[in-house]
Image (cartoon, rainbow, N blue to C red):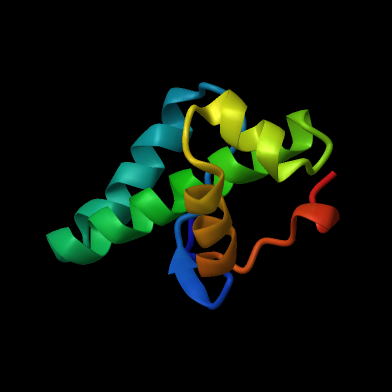
Length: 91
């Protein structure tokens, strides 16, 4: 599993499913990097996957996505900006 880019950031792409091999290969990639870099990439990949998933569920509605995620709408908007995610392009 290689590195990907999203919103100008180098991230680890997360695959769908619960296959142990996907988790192991993700860990192998991360373990080969310095802790801070690996942690950032793992967190970025999770955030991107989580945000796009919740926006898909809410048909791109940021307010409803924030409510479902139990976070402040403004915080979700900052994350959208950070990862260059456009809610209208998600669903």
